[in-house]
Amino acid sequence: MNAAPNILRFQDVTVRYGRQPALQDVTVDIPCGSLTAVLGPNGAGKSTFLKACLGWLPLTRGDIRIGDAHPQHALPRLAYLPQRHAVDWDFPITVRGVVEQGRYPSLRPWQRFGDRDRALVDRSLDELGLACLAERQISQLSGGQQQRIFLARALAQGADIFLLDEPFAGLDLLAVEELARILRSWEAQGRTVLAAVHDLEIARRAFGRAILLATSVVAAGPMESVLTEANIDLAFRRGKGASENPLRMTRTAEFPK
Amino acid sequence: MSFHDLIVDPFSFGFMQRGLFSALLLSLSGGLLGSILVLRRLALMGDALSHSLLPGIAVAWLLFGTNTLALFVGALVAGLLTALGSALVSRLTRVKEDAAFGALFTVFFAAGVALLSRLPARVNLEHFLFGSILGVSASDLRLAALSSAITVIVFVVARRSILLETFDPVFNRATGGRGPIVHAGLLALTVLNLVAAMQTMGVVLALGLFLLPAVTAYLWCDHFALLLLVAVAVAAACSFAGIVFSYHSGVASGASIVLCLGIVFLASALFSPRHGATARLVEFIRERHSVHRSAD
Picture (cartoon, rainbow over the protein chains, first blue to last red):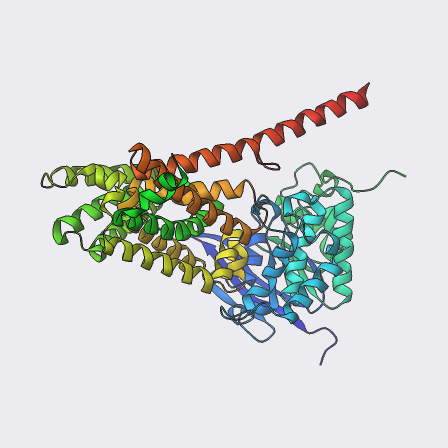
């Protein structure tokens, strides 16, 4: 067995919304236990890429494999994190209540929420430092803590592949650092993370690998080989040579010394 | 007036007992369903749905009389036609779904009123719209018991799917959940319970028995299970109070129950300790005060 077998493979994948292609001839391999950012301008197909991994979109052409299985048969291995604004934070539910949801898909209707489920929930809450906040209603937490609730739910699912849709959107600087640290520790534990990210600077610092999309793949591989001036120019301006370098347009996330 | 006169006397009549039991049974299912409708932001759609049932009920009544199964099927067909019709209109034209729903349900409601106004004189349009506790028959009570039992069973069996689909439909789908089935099932249950509540409450007011307890509980509870329990308790308590009030005052039973619920809701909206208007206002003023202080 290889050191890092490819866990997620896109083979010549094309997805269309109507006549408009959202992904065109995408062929990429994502190694097991890697931290990969899916990058690209608005409308480049970042969300489509994640949804295709979940098997939600009919493929016009091509094939997606998770391990050896079709996405539909690998759902228990996948955890999908929604964007933060998609959540109703006023919902009458506690932090623990949300994390417990991670166990629901594997429980039959007549099964009780057992000791093993409870242990998994406790462990997930512990790992993300939410144990002392577990009984709070979810709106009473800060942005970064709210993000961690859903990471904990994903852990409780027992998944090993994590699909994150814009996890850094709307987080303050401290929360961004915190999330980056959590993702790196997940990588160290052999978990595979795939995240749609629009901020190139954050992606450069938090992720080891990248896929740069502009409907088709512009570049894929280790971060430094993907985020070259030429590639960024190609993805963001289709090589038309506009005035600004988008790397310089992004905000810098450094603390003043 | 003694306690006996106030509370016990009214229920010495068989029809009052039937009315009370039917209202309590529907409080159980209505509290559960209403909570989900409120949390899924479908409250207004439920209201529109309740109006759109009328032509189905009218046609069923014309063809089969007071056969409850026929009434349910008629109502279900009318409700589904409205839901599917508005979905189709929004897909095929420029009109958005909420506007399509609003347009269709008024047309359906008008058709129902037109049909019912052409019925033989002994049937009263008001009876369908606002209900009458005097008319709750043994078969109406059976229908209420049946729809309440079905609702509770569905909620027990599908409790996790219902919570997942309500809180996070995307997660539910990503983990292999069947969202559309849960959604359709909840709509069918709503129609079933609306039909069952028609005799006591009328189609228009019945939704008040579903929604008001839920929004009241929403102002008090931060736990999903607790919210369902409180909603059911509020519905049951106000049904009882409303029926007693209706007996002594002569006010129509449906209106009386909904008014009781309205009072409890208003009081909660004003004075709920965490989510009420007063508490929020006090907090707002206190915050401004402390900002001024620290600025000095």
